[in-house]
Amino acid sequence: MGKKKINSLEDLGGFVFSTNENFEYENNENTETLPANKQFLEAHFSNKGRGGKTVTVITGFKGLDSDLKALGKLLKTKCGVGGSVKDNEIIIQGNYRDKIMQILKKEGYNIKRVGG
Image (cartoon, rainbow, N blue to C red; front, side, top):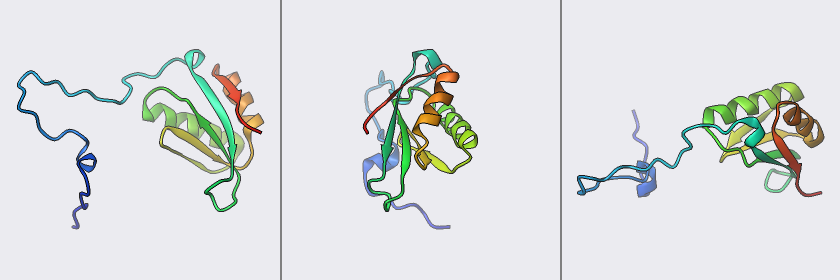
């Protein structure tokens, strides 16, 4: 089996070793997901850097990756299209911004349209 090549300290997870016996590791991940009515999401439309393909990007989600992925799956299913979840963004293939905004409002999220 091949080992993954380590290029920087960040590939090790950011934390390597501390000689301080009172040191407590701070995890930057959110420990719980905010309720839908406390979330302020933004719906963007983009085709830059994607070979001219049009996508709808949802940003601003605060919470666990698993909850973000579940929300992404819900949106992909309701729109009947593909997409992905990465870098704390939900990327839906195609221009479904208005439909996605309706779905998220129905789920209780605060969402605003950003850009054109």
